[in-house]
Length: 236
Image (cartoon, rainbow, N blue to C red; front, top):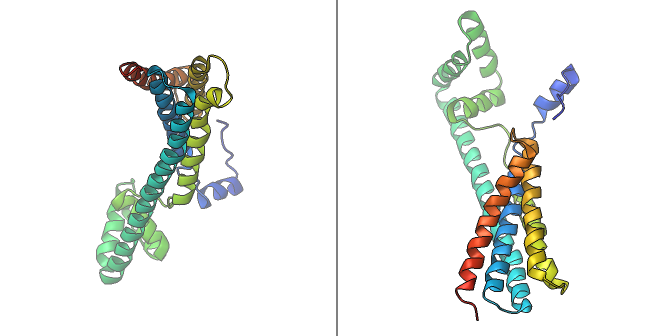
């Protein structure tokens, strides 16, 4: 990652428009789960010796139904998180109105834990409590540990569903296209997706790209092996 600039304009732009957590978690979560669950179905059905049309039918059902279910669950979770933030904000607004002196003491305690003291602490407390929104934001961060950027439920849901759909279709493509050795191709393609997801994830981590790729490959591969072994127990 390139170091960001430190001109006044660049600093103001970053602080005034914080990006929040973004959709990285949603994309990684959806992609891995889409690949793992779809290939698990492919491996299980192939292990049971069932025909390709069964693999395609069950795989498509999983991609659409499970993908929608995950997206809906992520939407509900993000919305609950946002609703909770709004609830706590309303509590702080009421407490500031009913007991402003007590809330000022809380602001002072929060700022003192950030290293302020003496007249600087007095001035900072006065400055914060003179602006209502700044006062509330500081209380949300200092008292509840909540960030100032609201979650985006619909964005999280769409990121989860699209990533699940794209990654989940990869194990099915050799069967949909009627290719020879479809299961072998599906296994190699899915493994490549696992590794690619891990490599992409390493851009936002301290782990080396190859180590992150292998780690994700091992997680997905383990799930696939379990599904295939279970499928062989019901071979027809």
